[in-house]
Amino acid sequence: RKMQRACGREIATILRANDAGVNSMPSLFHSLANRAAALLMKALFAYAARVQVLRRENANHKGAFLLAANHISHFDPFILSSVVRRKIDWMAMAEFFPNPLLGSFLRAVDAFPADRHRADRKTIRTAIERLKQGRIVGVFPEGGIRDGARSLLEGAPLRPGASTLAHIAGVPIVPCVIMGSDRLYSKKSWRPMRRTPIWIAFGDPIS
Image 1 (cartoon, rainbow, N blue to C red):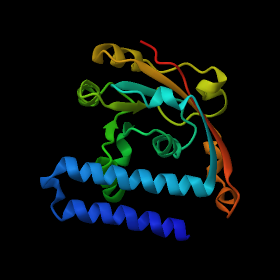
Image 2: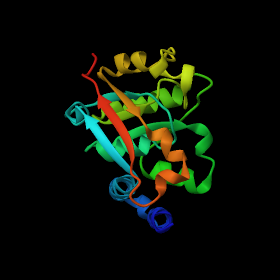
Image 3: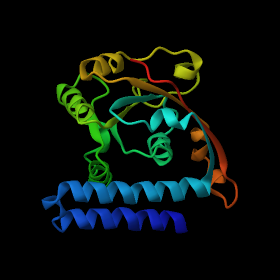
Image 4: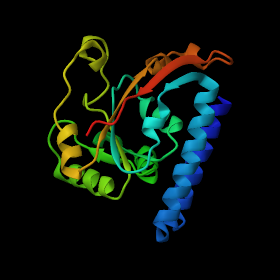
């Protein structure tokens, strides 16, 4: 509960700063928002999880790339962002953005909406622009949370688009696998000293 209250305070601080006119300095605002969110996520998952990362250096090299990961829980983008030194601009479900609190938070940390049901030119254009600026764009090529036989981990097919996006932007794809984050849905995982094991591996860049 203390951790939940702390999360709420951090998010509220970010949103108040935005409402107070920090948009006049958008780069500073987004920088502060991302730093606050990163510190918050690191503290949160250090408390709730024992995260083991393999080949982290593949996600920390300079230059733009598309980070493509499997997706087994809503925690995935936050966990991945907490273990990568550089900022990740996540492509997130468009359904999240109409929510005033969540939508404002996602925009503050430079996430942008994606329609899962059709090709969205605005989303593609935004992703390409950010990649050409030398940034990391994070995507979940499965098109949403998938488990069991529907998961990439069980051999399910990827939705098309990630490789085309990387090709147009002229950047490599860094593949990523995350396992164990779905266990955080259990309330038992958030008990003191429980620390749910989570495994993350970053593959070699694919050009």
